[in-house]
Image (cartoon, rainbow, N blue to C red; front, side, top):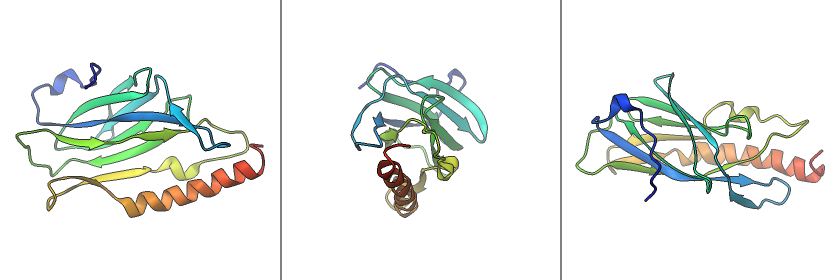
Length: 162
């Protein structure tokens, strides 16, 4: 799919899963989005930094991570308000094909007079579902955070971004 693939050399040959998607920049005032260019992504494995890289110019990314660990993935760097994703891959059994997570991420730039403390915790949480044999997001959790974030966006729009 994409020539770019981030993976730490120490884990080559390990049982891996893939996370791929595109990062978008959201204009809070208009609600429109566009692909975000070269966004920083930092991955923590079991609370220690594992790898950091930048998305492609069109916002695409793809990386492989070893099974058997917990991950927190930070999208945004210093350019955007960071959004975090939690992935629990501790109890995943290796498979003949690779397990995959498709994840597009919408980011926005920091704004004066607004804090986004709700994004101090992961915005999306994935866990392995043994019944379906795949990673599934906690949709109820993410929906709750999305509603809270949308309330802040409405305040920003109502104030004209001030």
